[in-house]
Image 1 (cartoon, helix red, strand yellow):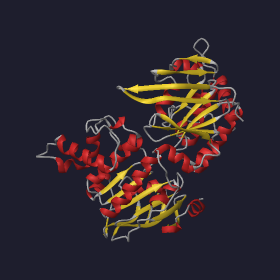
Image 2: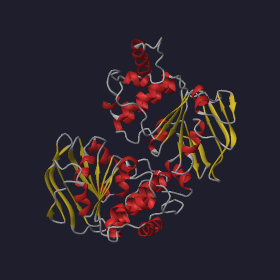
Image 3: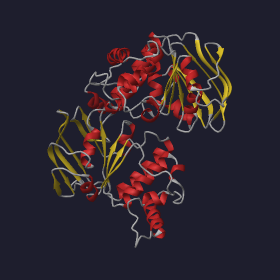
Image 4: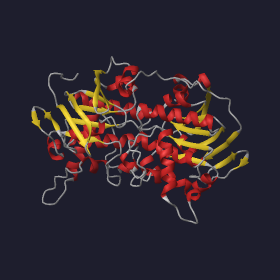
Length: 498
């Protein structure tokens, strides 16, 4: 149990501004040894800014931070490191070509006269992993590990460097259920060693599962501070979005599906999936549900032409379709969102209008020349329709938007391109509750009003319940069940996927 009377971290009255706009308005936060503090809030609520101040990356305009009894007006990365503060980012910061042992010792080589003691490096790695209660081959290249194992290696590295405070940023966003449970076991080990943890997440079911207290930010202020075991899901969501919100609910607007847009029969891809059958109709949202590694993502990628070596029959609007590459898919009015929007979906250093307009360039061009006017007009139009929270400046770089708003821009890209079939992989991964609701409403409204078909692959059962008309469940590369309407439940999805 955490020692509530002692504080590893105490931040009070934290104010922070960017470009003259204040984003944190006197925020307080405290963390005790062995405590897990869940930090919640919509994208743009101030979570990232607050933890970066604690990690020493940002300097606040006002406020003070106390670390184990030592008071600071601000921290820098060196002071934060000396105070035992480490941040485990959602995007891994390891060295894939180095071994587990080498990664754990990065920055701690301890060479004597230029000679590295590999014995000490191996001993350090074995000790750190043993403290976490995990068994990972220390001689294996990190790039060959699963995502969950790579996160644990990063935690082990922090622990080897005497970390007393860990900031975990969306640690389960890309993990399977089994990997998440393993991470939770690691967190329990850290708790027993009196390591304090700030746990940022959008998955509300994890709050009561692992946290002691929950701190909710909204618009740069603390909206709720509560016992994590007593706070209800409704209270958490209401605190995040500033109004009442219902629990997980089924769509109420289930229109009768129209003609068949997509038909996949007995499709297979070596080492990924086999014998998969499903259809997508006009006006229908179909979810391929399964744990990470079940093959759902590879099915979606195949439809978009990323795996031309697949076998089996795919029909588009009743005609045989051979998706040999993404250009073929786009030419046939198929839109696509990858799971990693920042690396594979968006041009992060380019303007939002340009990101939105890319597939529509042939339509925008005049004698081979593309002007920015149609892009900017389209962006302003979709900003209002999809509730994209931004400065409404078409030249604003997409990297400056929150994750949920980046995703809305990428959705608008395909709506602007008049796609008739949308293929979306984990469309709300790393997206806050409010943005999720907006995206779900957008998808269902677009399916109904524009008569398009939508295929979603997801490992989030709540997402399936809230948005899908039909759900195809996959496990280990095989289709194991199919549900529709009210039969799509948490129990039915999780039971069959397992």
